Length: 474
Image 1: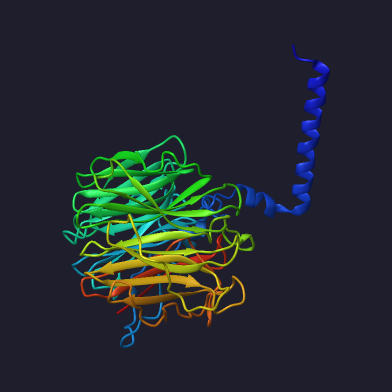
Image 2: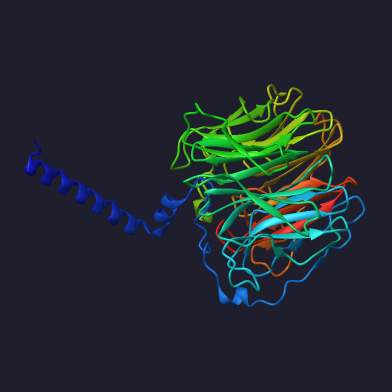
């Protein structure tokens, strides 16, 4: 039997405790509430998410863009792509074998000329001349809010383009396909859940199309073997006891082995606990998976002053494969909780089951932050890597994007090249770098002429304002 007096006492104590928490929260200010609401990578709490402004919708027609020629042996100056109003965020890029380069990104704050478009909405842009000129940006498949852009070209035919994103309150993973260089698209729901998903990673080869994504502490892969018409879902870490997981990179090898990289956070709800970096591979079309521990990092550095989530600068790994079946990975990690991350490279010749010793590939001084690895490969041993770091500043307020190449599968590397450049007229771009990365990944790809194409996000803070920038080089 319940004792009424005991119940009243316990209920009153609970109420007093809640009031105390509220008073402390108000005393500390709104930042504590924003931090409590952040997902690990900060998704879903950008102040402009869902907000559409009339000045954006009524902005003038978007224009195409011309990119200045690159200096001999170097990269072009960075050029802004996408719409030039409101915010552009987390871009993805892919090059085909017919001169086309594609970008896909979520546009925040509304879409010019589209009163019915949500915030964010997926927007794409294409160049038909190896990145020299670009069409005006356009919506790909307007619908409800859409997040986390991915775009990839089938390496077998060199022309079929796939795109992926999440929508419907992040519960649906969408895959779109174009067989005519983006003139028209078809789309399917690769997976639909009753809860939020995050960070889809797209990997394709021929009729095999895979999308990895996380749902809280679990990582799932939707697999298709009919060119993206139908998908079957598999959980790749069913026995994992983690606080949170985030997908990172993916690749399909010539023999059909598919591999994904992902980060497993041992704790959730704050920048604490180890981050386990895994490579998961399947040799039977995604039906069964083997998980290999690549590295263990400490808790992510704190970047709450820049409005970002607790895992935003945390360890993550990405992947690329070569024509001879080698698998390459680039990742950032630290050796002590909340310490700055370094960036590392390793190679596998057995589909990701075993890896070479990790190699620190940055020449930045110790104590400088490294984040957002990007990697691409072509041929048998041509590997290209990129990352962002803070060597130009004293804390987190000055970043640049660096690039290196290897012609022997990562055994040795070229000198570093800073591929970010100064642009006048932006309060977050300076002569010595940009203030903060805008988006928790950026990408690069290699075209059939061997040119490297990079698209990256630069901004004032995680929240706003920010834009996406393109450069190409040898």
